[in-house]
Length: 480
Image 1 (cartoon, rainbow, N blue to C red):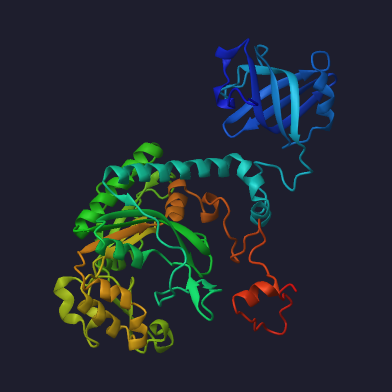
Image 2 (cartoon, one colour; image 1 turned 120 degrees about the horizontal axis):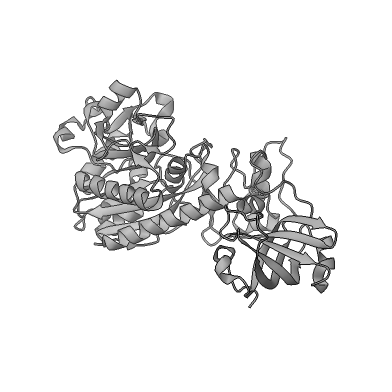
């Protein structure tokens, strides 16, 4: 076996033992016939020393470069008095190298690992090097812990984790779809899901009752500091036979326990989370995602709150008509949101702006980190909403599968979908969502590591019956 211990397991209790370590060269210091190497793995660092007198592999050090991948074997000794490093668990010992093996030598680096002054574009291009740095590595470790905690919490609450399709149907839901042409069905397209919204509602009709998924979502949107273009992940939860209050209570319980377990240094502005109506938020804060923190300079203060009682519709100008539907009203959240019972009387063209919805947003430090609602399960109400946003009969048929499902004993249901990436960004106090994603797109929705999107061969386009109609100035053309 190449490794006997991880660096985090190396300490003074192992003095005198033979160990084998693997990792990357963090630093090299050569002093004549003696060289010091700091070896770094995912778990930390260990100082090692090699001398020409005690190892035939000393000559290998001359060719060694920073970030080369190596293994070292030898005996652990106590560090000389006064040279201990209290910041490391291995700081009281050093490995006397008897054997050094080079897995691969690193070329000259485009930037120094752990240098936070490097520009984002070059960090994204060489993301694998950036991940070796402490900050991004630790963010990804915390991301793993948070997702793992969520899974365990929901499993104990009797939720089922179910994967929904990535290739689905294009339907007018809000953002632009990413389209995937079909090779078999000429002239037809799949779409990547903007969210699992319709599938999770169909799961409720299927009797699952409690569903969750760490779901990938795809939307052709512009980038923002708190929004990664192209794709993102959300904690998708859907529940049958639960009131809005019950959904909010469960989600709040998850957030509180998650923070206390994973980020115990953080503290809450107020518990339970305040529940603020949309009208109150707009009147008091002038926005529907208020920052309720008492001390906004405290990086460990978390100001969670709920925003409820949103308008069911928003009034549109003609140029903004929802997906070409010719009416003045568009859905504030999405078209599957249930109106409040007392506002059913407003479901008409003249008064629709008065209707409130069973919609709820989870807000943290001035960011919307989750949104959801009680869903429509009555096909008559759903059809009425389609009419109010101006759907034609052709557009309605795009959702015929939903309306049909609602006619077979659909339960009352609702849910919420906290955004995993944005939630972690705010919890960690990062200024950009890209700091909590392993391989994010840049501001132009490009994957700089893989150089995507890219042109494809002409034959690939022919297979899926696609012809390009590019502007004349466009230089990128399919490869022949």
